[in-house]
Length: 358
Image 1 (tube, rainbow, N blue to C red):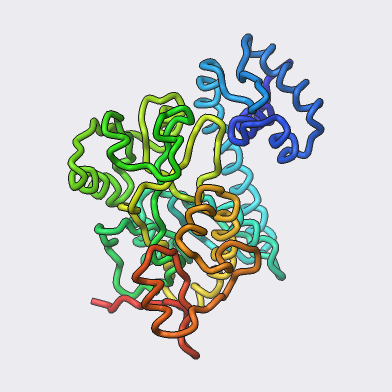
Image 2 (tube, rainbow, N blue to C red; image 1 turned 90 degrees about the vertical axis):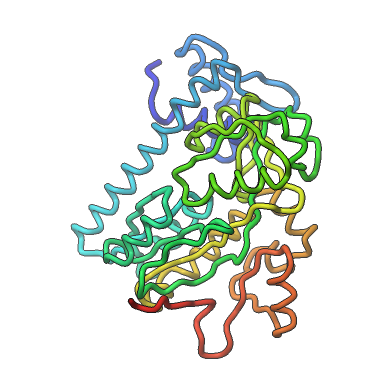
């Protein structure tokens, strides 16, 4: 059998779901067919890629090696398809929406919703680890919208004239660690539980390295800190080499545990930026729905929201536009731990701020 990109995607889905049954459901295949396909892939590669047990599938060392090379290829093919569709839409004269984003599980759902509008909008996507770089692209007219993360304690450099709309005022950041790490048995992980671990952080993400160093220092910890992209960090975390910061919307994997940090010491603000409020309106609702869809698919985040007392609207479908009823409620929610969306007073756009021109 000649290996194809679709086979690599199968391996990624099995690893991400941790189960042949769940993987088959996500891929739209019968489980026996998927099992047969996996055996053929393993035969083509010359070794077992997953260990099968009643509790699920976990990658073998060979499987980890293959997955570390497969994931970028699958992502690159998806980017190629997106770019090709965009070019086709441009040739056909269809409307385009140029969006940029830092990494988020909400992005696939955002793109899907934009394409399913009537009339449909064909988005182009520019990914960048630097929120500041994306904001500069919006200000320069090279992007229409940018969905960015502002790390608490490290304000972004907002170019003059941009409009900002808050999607989530404070999203807690979780930690990713090996599923068999002793701290993974806890509902919430204490920083002290990770005192002997090495951390891997992407230092090119605006503010993330500095804030994590400060948080660890305040906790009296001085662990080894490694620079690395998050694809590498997650691969190494899965085999117990490092621990790393994780967005709460990260989907579970059989080899990784996603856990809140006790006290939620690290938070980010999620923002949508554009040059005009009209541009914000052209993509905000779809992004909001996509974000909370991703949140509902992340069990650790759902559990955190329930413990933190999040309104029911954050935990069920159809939550778009749920208001905070009055000023005292607004103050209580903003002062607490719950991620919030605050609706405006009549006539004002939701949490929109315009930066003064110089």
